Length: 136
Image (tube, rainbow, N blue to C red; front, side):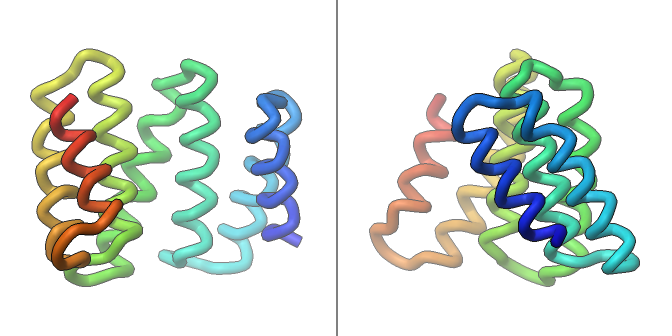
């Protein structure tokens, strides 16, 4: 059920129907936290999705703690390099970048780039995206 709520919220989000997406993302997050005590990849996904919605609405103060929690959880879940950790690093960095907090964004972008380079040898779209993020 939590997955279905999340998927419907994602559909609404992609349609720009943020007010319809928010209660579904919130319910999915609450349900997932009840289902999976402690750290779990699904909880981190739900945290991230709700944060993305808030960021899209200009609600940075609501998005920030969710991005931070998702990043911390993913770092605990995935020792070493992992694409989900790199994604969370980029998301939090983008929040800081969009606020003009460049000195806070840069080390996160650098860490995400270094991790992505270790994950994907040679030319890879994810490395190019991380390079682009850092260059902005």
